[in-house]
Amino acid sequence: MRRIRAFPAWAARAKLARMPSLDGMRALVTGAATGIGAATVARFRAEGAEVIGLDTAPGHVGPIADVTDPDQVTAAIASAGDLDICVANAGVSLMEPFVDGTLDSWRRVLEVNLLGVMTTFSAAVAAMPSGGRLLATASTAGLRGEPLASAYCASKAGLISIVRTLSIELAPRGINVNAVAPGQIETAMNRRDLDLVAARTGRPAADLLREQLDLEVPLRRLGTPEDVAGAFTFLAGPDAAYVTGAVLRVDGGLLSG
Image (cartoon, rainbow, N blue to C red; front, side, top):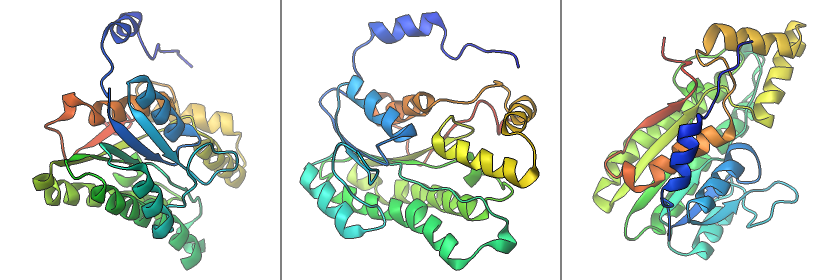
C-alpha cells in the first residue's frame, strides 16, 4: 500500500511558529480517556486551554461522568465553572445486521450517541453565559448508510440534525455549534468493529482494511485521533468565529466521490 505523508515538514514548522489558539479558554471534553477524546484534550492543552475531561473508563484521571446520566453530567459541568468550549465526544458503536437488532441494543447506542449529546449540550449551555463553542463528534456514517451499522448511522445522523438546529437556536446567545465527522480513524473502537466484520465474513481484518483504504479513501491511509483533534481545535478557535451549523469531514476524501 502506497504511503502518503500525513503532515509535511513546512506545516510542522508553521505550527511551531504560531501562538496558541485557545490561550486562556476553559474547555470540557467527554469520552476523554482514549482515542479522539484523549487527542483532543492533549491538543487543547497544547493550545493553551484549561481542559476538563469526563469519562467512565477505569483509570481515567479526572471527573467521572456517564453521559447517559443527566445528573452526573450536570454536576460535573457545574463544578467546572463557566465554559468557553464543550466537545461532546463520548460514543459507542454497534455492529449487527438490522434483522438481528433489538430495542435494547438500539437504546444503548441512542442513549450515548444521541441523548448523551443532548444532555451534555444542555448542561454546557448553562455554563456559557457569555457565549462559546459547542462541538460534537459525528461520523461519516451519519452522512451515508453503512452495512451492519443501522443504529450507529441513525444516532450520528440525529446528532448532525441536533447540531444544525442548535446552531440556529443558540446563535442569539453567541454560541457556535458545529460537528466533526471522522471517517476511518485508527481507534480501539474502529479496530473492534473491523475485527467483528472480519469474524462475520471469514476474511482477515488486514485484508478488509487494505481493500477499504485502496477502494474508498483517496489518501490511502487511516486517519489519526490527532487529525480529528486538529479539526476540533480549528472549530474551537478564533478562525472559526463565523462558522456555525457546519459538519467538517475528516475522512481522507472518503465522501468526496
